[in-house]
Length: 314
Image (cartoon, rainbow, N blue to C red; front, side):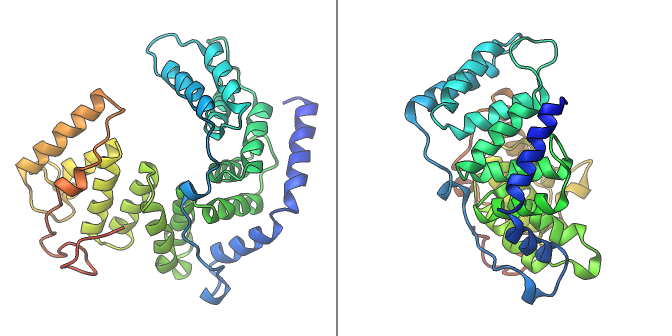
């Protein structure tokens, strides 16, 4: 990276330190395993309630760029970048996120988009100025990895906490995983972690919902609730969700994947078929899956390990 780029990155770092000092302290208390009285008040916020509205014309340009990105073979990166930039001129934060992602990795061997850390940081900074939850999460990851800025666990924690407070499901499951799995055993707090996972699992982020399912499977040993979240993720087009559902009802040769459920070839075939449909068309969604195909009770835990007679609800 050039000296100028380094100076720009350092300036960014200094300019944001004062802004997030208080929230960094709050989250450091939360993640340190301090007594419960020191925890900041948990707030379940949803990302959709904090995302800025998108300009209609900019959304059309964004969708055109996304369609061009999905074209098989050689892609017209110059036009893709041009469309994203037009949308960004109207504060389209999704276009900012996508274009920043292109600048983060570049596209080796293809003209039109080159790796450019400085441009990536500019776009992430712009997302934060618009108070986009995903923007705060992006900065948390940047500081965590030291990509283009000085690596700082304190700043990473600050941005992650801000993102979670604004409803980022990715930030919420990141904090939940830290509390439940990454601290020393005597400092882990599944109660607080569950609050974050439940909030994230109620949103429409398949990645976060899969993390929520894993929490209930591993930390809580609540298999029906874990399967509930796998099904919810599948309804939103998650291949991982369908893989889990298919495996749970398969008779052979993977009984370890069944989570204690009885094999059911009809259900195994049903979810395997939907999984294959999704593989053929990644844009498919199954909004009525949970309503039309309620999961059977677990042989031991019923519909929920904590409430055997009650189906899980968001």
